[in-house]
Image 1 (cartoon, rainbow, N blue to C red):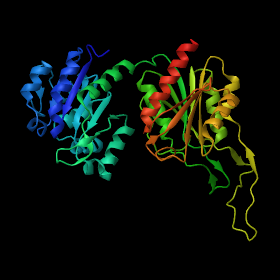
Image 2 (spheres, rainbow, N blue to C red):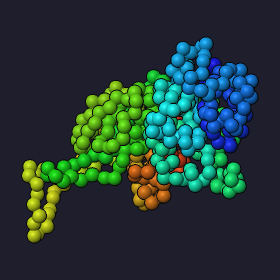
Image 3 (cartoon, one colour):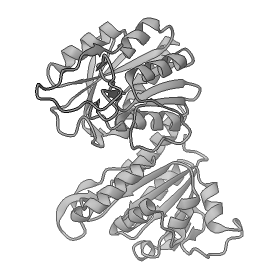
Image 4 (tube, helix red, strand yellow):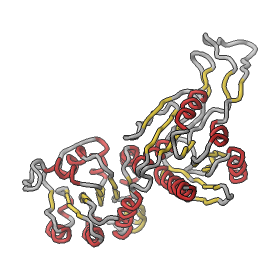
Length: 400
């Protein structure tokens, strides 16, 4: 799948750059067309001449380097590439990308580039875990960058910890996997729900839940990147809408139900990641409710079960539900799957560290209609999204 693909390999200034020739050989050996762009610091750790020989292409490092191929070098390289791989990605380079700075060739072309990006961060452990660096990495993940996890082991300083560049074989495998999976959902039409819903009590107060929408937005982002046409219906969040996704913003559960019902017959599958409110106020006060000596009593009505309604309505669609539990998770998720007539249920447990609301990782168990439960390790929500989409794709192909 990588043969003939155009890969721009960015090399920034870390000691792990000594692994770059091995990465380059593996990519070129599989038939990829690779161009190398180095920072000035990167050229201190690995010779540009070596990379020119291995890539069979000129190596560029200066913003104003001349090129007979591209009239404007940074624009031409950005338009040429099918994928950008930056390895090693230092704290400085990550910070530039997250901030939109453009003071060298690599950072400048990244402002012109609009395709997939894969980063392989590498640095000392204290730098990696610095809150500014973590914020920058998360910022890039939210923009759709794939950030590989640094490995643990001996670092350049002699300390032992996390921060090592993954081995060249692993990095190359990630690139190969991207091109193998990159358009595997081509032609599918998917509906994704995300975020919380909000139920008003009066003009000031409402009830809701802790959902940030990160899991649903990750699903929409990865589905679109893998070739699907995606409709995202979301409650209120602070997240940017993924590029290329059709978006509908809603507030209440009833609004989400109405939006979903309009779209459902048009899609091949629906992934219901939203955390919808189970109840709403029977009456919404038109004026702010005042404090009273006897307390406050509010009557609530049960909201419609969107997943169950779609489960009864579905014909050919693949329906994926979510179950967030705090006890007896697998048993409750299996019961929900059957009751709601879903094809796949995604279970996560709020009691597990790294799972649940407002974090960038998740720990889920995938349960299918046969009752089989596949527990996944803790991983980023983008990676969890890919594993869910893998299963949805399998189910769709089986049904087709």
